[in-house]
Image (cartoon, rainbow, N blue to C red; front, side):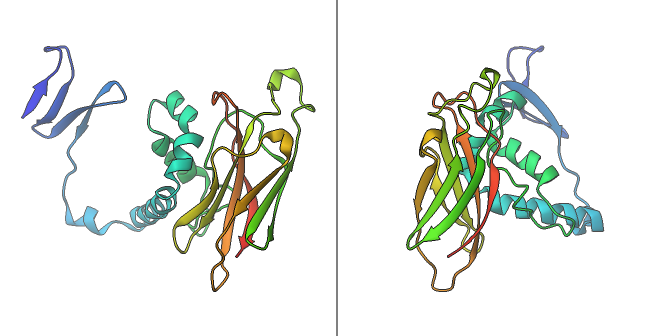
Length: 216
């Protein structure tokens, strides 16, 4: 049973025949119910490739949600959806290689028009990762509105344990350095690492960029 909201000219919520109505991000949405078929359940070759990519993207995005909610917040507002959906949509289109595996160098956890890190690097020392970059706040023109108090965002991902470390609100752009504490594995594994910047007022954010693999 569906319930009308706002009279005959309003939206409705619930099931009505073969369609379902609901409200999402302030808009009324109507979609058809999926049709069951043995063919669709088994899937074609292309469908199974797409399903595999979708599953892999879900696996990496789920543990990264705290970063995604901040990193894709502004993009989601522009798109009228959730940060998770915006991140998934962009990375599904851009972050897979020809073999259907996630290309960490193309993957993003943040998206925006704030200029990102310049000359970013990372090195491991004892139980810390040392991230560095060059402060370019005084090099760009006024139109970029770069500030030395932009804060760094660091993300380091462990694919095997689906865990992460880093910071959402770290050192200032002018400090050119951020230390991240790590717990070393008995058998060292590779961890992809990314860096980004967010403005102090949270109204601008940079595209995250890949720093490289760190083994610990």
